[in-house]
Length: 280
Image (cartoon, rainbow, N blue to C red; front, side, top):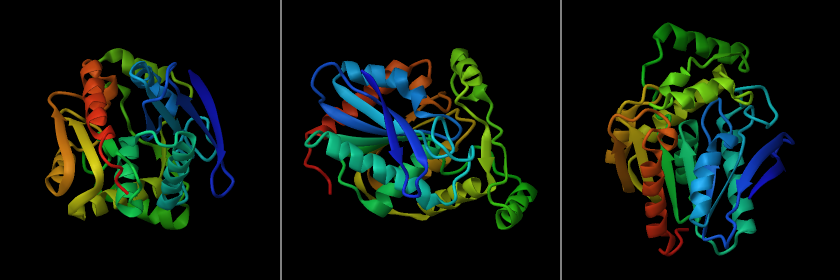
């Protein structure tokens, strides 16, 4: 069963979301944080898979994305995005008390979830991170980076194309075609958003130690959007983390040609950790 979610951000911005609930009793809950340019509705196929196993999925479109309000691809600061994770977390804890709770962040959402785990230390049974934006797969040219810093001082909301090629999402060409035809998808990113995400990625890669909750980190080795090697490096530097590389896979593992295997891996990992004492 799919239901619409409506909420207000701390600054009054209208946020729209989706929740997918199983027909039978809810065994566990997954809060989803999506990537740049997309929206939570693109996770409906994954939600259908998890619903069949008794798991609920829910998430909001990030500000400036999907049906949520805000200039496309822009956020005033990184903390405004983290605040959306706080909102989702408290909503799911209140709505499903006593149920195992996990967060899943993909791409930009993976960056946000990792940073949120380290800064907030939430009470979760675990987190799943796929293809996180720790670094881009290709370095940003120095002149473009210098211009972005200048524009961030002069006009932070200035936005341009994110340069994403939908063909790089998955080895399944139907995924890229659906992305191109999706009216809720956009290709915008503001200089403020880009620099905030890059700064957070650097901080994450400079961090070492145990993560506060069990974490499953997965990345496709042929990802042409976010850096596979950066994820491997992050995994090497952190404990309480399981690293699962997917040979030859592109950016969106949950939409890949072997998506069923990917989702089964996520499900098994969550079921293994759902019975563990809650990490607080």
